[in-house]
Image 1: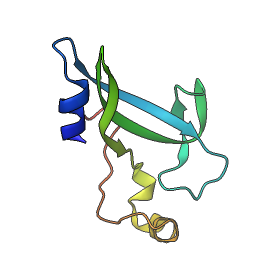
Image 2: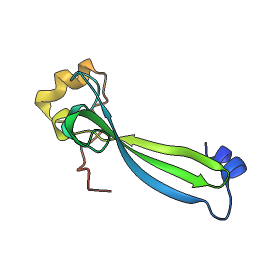
Image 3: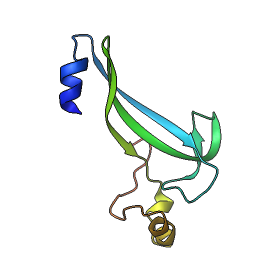
Image 4: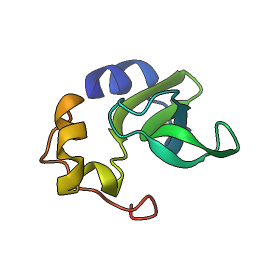
Length: 100
């Protein structure tokens, strides 16, 4: 991805953008879903939150990195069954959404 960004998108005006976005989910078994505020819906919903690093410039944009926010309930021992059934890695720690 880095090679693509450097070769095809690099220009002097290019910037890196960090963007948090949410995907509203109907169920509760998708990895990292919980009731939380998401700007996508403008309210608290069952949702997944991800943070994207985007390189944006006059020649286009690409997201060379992203990370799924794992809510604390997904990393606690009582959630192990839910985490295991969703095949979520147990090694991912929970972080607050404000800790960057």
